[in-house]
Image (cartoon, rainbow, N blue to C red):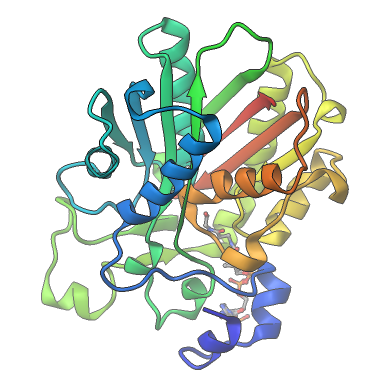
Length: 309
Ligand code: UT7
């Protein structure tokens, strides 16, 4: 879906969208495609790249806010579709930070020795909760999925540090208000689009820049590094201006950041793993590189992970 397509739906313009967000296109999954279908494709490619078989996977962690069903978790559907019969599976509902939360949980499970090989997924069909009559939100979001295999290793490479934080007092700044137990559906709510994403963009923007900076510095410090040691910043792909403001505060130049939001928009939990995969396939990641991933989203919630590639 291009900006020109959106110009036909709401009162917006390519100029406004590009200058305020950096986004030019987003991918919208077909009717009949579920979040798990996107996730399965990403999981297959991650497992092929890692050279692991089905029975090597001990756990599937899937970050999503657009699950296939309310019950069971989408991770269980992914497990079934992939035939990962030896694995446990659960979802993480941490919005755009879901993949970072997944990495953090995977790190902890591996460090305790409970699991050895974990599939960490971020998958979203955000188009299912976007209001295509609300120009303040519909231009931002897209569908997608990304996945990685995290495994126990004795090498000094891997996930060095992670940090997670949230502030539920700010939940009304980015939420889907209706459809849960607090506010079940009513015809009036549905009519007013309150079962779709609502956002106070400018407030979220400020928190995002401030808190992602803190989260980034925290994981860098925990790994006993400095921002100068970061080889590549792979941020949540929400808004080019947010990423630029963050990078400036971390003194990370354009050549050390990875951007792909112009093609995909904000894919929530899928955004960081899609960016990581594209950076890797483009040869931007070399063994020993320090990769900083950082994200924020509805909760509000934010977090970071630092990886030695
Ligand atoms: O994963 C986390 C997801 N959340 C985010 O990433 C949100 C972070 N926030 C943002 O990215 C930005 O706040 C937005 C891109 C959403 C908005 O940019 P902004 O510079 O904060 O604009 P604004 O909300 O202050 O709106 C400025 C103007 C308003 O018009 P008036 O009141 O000044 O006349 C809006 O009505 O832009 C108008 N506007 C639009 N105009 C054309 C809002 N959306 C659009 C649009 N096209 N799509």
